Length: 347
Figure 1 (cartoon, helix red, strand yellow):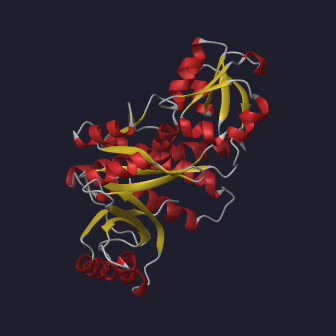
Figure 2 (spheres, rainbow, N blue to C red):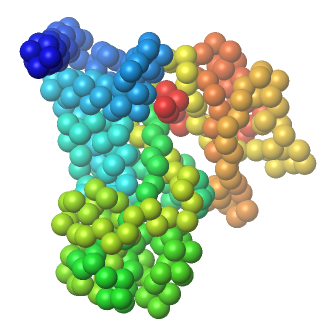
Figure 3 (cartoon, helix red, strand yellow):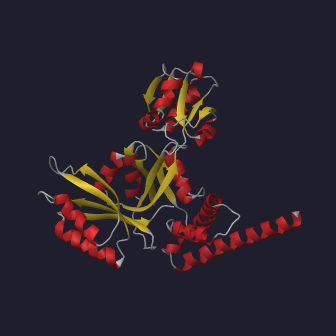
């Protein structure tokens, strides 16, 4: 049996090297071939999942193929991605989930810094949080999307499991709990029940909180299991989030457009006419064409007082003939319309 496994392992190794050579060949003939783009991974993984008849589970298959595809592409065409640092944040985990562990991940201070880094050409992409299932939208990300020339190139959802990390093992030693404000809010009931007298202090990120917990035994941090490994902290308790379905959605931003895959999402930025029924006016073309709207969010336009714009997420791609017609109708009735991005729907 060990001989058979050894033979299979050598076959896998040979195929991995063959895939890298195929990527090299593509790069030699066409530097911008879509087959080497990060978003192509989503389509390949979807195809493999549809073809899988087991016994490998879907989650395991997805992880393996993401790593294989991204590693072979990065071996030929290295990808740099900016994320909300320091290392060990959930945004860092979202980068690795979407781009694989071989990506060149660059930690940046603040969400605005991620946009600035990509706009300056220091990285090809950035990953920013946009929505949490329990805390709602990340307004700063939405506001920056109204101002940037960058496009949304992809999306990734990440199940959030919070851990209480510290330099010691005892809850009785903890006088302060540090974390990002959203993480503190997401663990409010657990903190009320287990650390009612500990001060709750907001930090720019959970990883920054973990760094502080390294320095003092009376400080605990709310962060991920990955952060515990990175910073050498003890996991005092895990799964302390109040909602066990806690999930954050992240957007991948960059400077290029993504080809249609047949299973896409588009994010629109639309303003409505200032008259009764103005919002209905911009939603009717979508309804009449049978385009499914999956999300709508309003934000101040910042151009004048009490003026708002709407982020509308719909199924479809701007290159699709039916959807292109809907966009033309929207341009006729909306004071302004911008397609922020069309990209593969997240797995």
